[in-house]
Image (cartoon, rainbow, N blue to C red):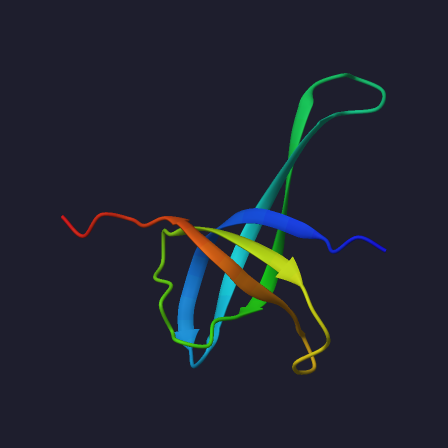
Length: 83
């Protein structure tokens, strides 16, 4: 079984060792054909608290770490500038 990976944007970093990552999925509507954007939010384990709001990150599925946390940070793709 392949490990699931996603790329998303950090939308919250207020918890300790946890960030919330929003992953957008764009797909055409089955009947009307218009592109519909669906956003899924994942709670992701961030051991060193490196991620900040606005960072683009790659996450992968892992064993359950808490009641709602089943993903962990693989890499930070690019960070939001602080200016």
